[in-house]
Length: 419
Image 1 (cartoon, rainbow, N blue to C red):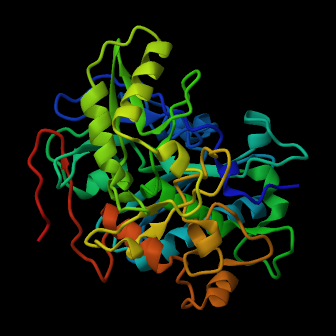
Image 2 (spheres, rainbow, N blue to C red; image 1 turned 30 degrees about the horizontal axis):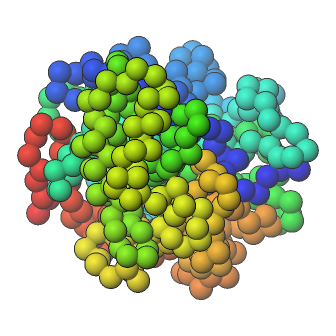
Image 3 (cartoon, helix red, strand yellow; image 1 turned 45 degrees about the horizontal axis):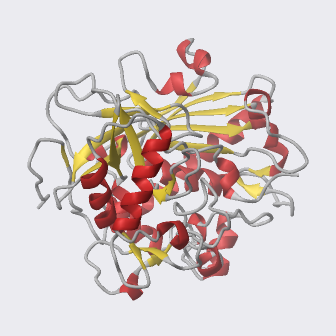
């Protein structure tokens, strides 16, 4: 059977990531290992590009791929390779799904620049394993590169490349060849419903919905708060970034707006407190780091380890909002914490049947995106609900209702507002 839980779109998100000096004198940038590990970062370099993070990278380098250019109505530019064992018809259907997903998102978001995607429809059962009676890996998409950027509050956070480009930074910025990397399992083709197919079956999931969901993760719908994945530690904190024998704490720009719904406390304040106490410490062992994290967590009364497994305890308060009731609830109902599902999706119990259905962690078999929109009362082809739209506007993507979002700046530059 195929797994209907979107957490299968990820393998393990490693929160202990490597910090090294950027190849640019002015810019810090980091590359994920692949789409399934967006937080397993390493120093970006000229030798690393989008193709090196995909399983069919050699096909890209040999120009054995298809390109779909961006248009006035579709900001997404696609470089696509397909499993050579798949029929030409299936490969074309898969490619069309990527194009359709990009076109739908381009109706909602007014991307001032094209969004470039390197995508593969690959045999993930062979390359990754994990295809058995308990579930099958569907796929994933994520940012191809992260950059350290400064927000309006002066805090330094990790921004996906797509958002960094919108800031129009000057100088030799080491952008990757593509903004988003995507990998989906070709062996699930019979269980995907593609554009042009006649009737979706009960055991099929809508491939356009899956891709649109993952594109949003690639654009920055991604939290850093997770168990630190250190021995004997289950404390939920932002990224712990080693720098030689020292460490620093870093969150994503998404996390600037994450709050505790009980009292409205901003998690970014906890990040600042953790950073102040831990950054620059000399760490002699994992045990010493765990002890330090636990001590600081106790000192600042950090409750996220409990909050992230308590339903409706964590929310995203959109930019400009101050009332806790305006927060978009994030997924925190899973016990234990589910890496890849908890925190980086909207609450399934609240939004699965609402217009924000797209960003829950659970797929809905037997329903096309058109049917999901109709059932939720959304306009045709809406696909992005009001809560999801507010989240993407808050992290920096323009829409017709919010054409001038805040523009972050590269570290060491002063923040400016786009008027």
